[in-house]
Length: 141
Image 1 (cartoon, helix red, strand yellow):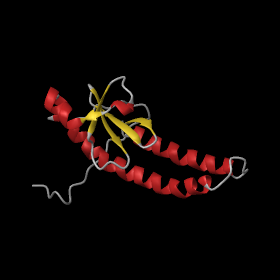
Image 2 (image 1 turned 180 degrees about the vertical axis):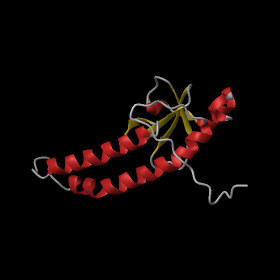
Image 3 (image 1 turned 45 degrees about the vertical axis):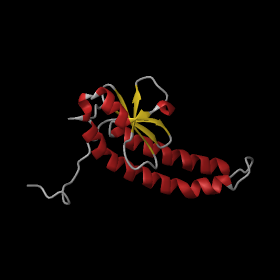
């Protein structure tokens, strides 16, 4: 018997571009790590954004801050993509189910939305209604 408090979730880390199909359970487990990575990146980015917002567009120091911003975001993108997660935009992600994407946006606390292939991230539908309507296999694995 495994003690739930001491159970360790091991993320599957692959190469950039490796595709991964997630069940709802897999995506929820991976989301824990994605949230930690994202919180860390947001925390690292916050002082940079504050300094950038306080500068005029013509300030020569802005170039260095923009580079710092880019390095932090690229690192985050690489980390979540290596987990097999699709990046839609800054802090917007999708977990491929084979039928569409389970979607998450920082600072949401759980996977609560689904997106059909080819749709814009803004067209997300509530996950609960998708599961009730279609009873997809990925939701019950």
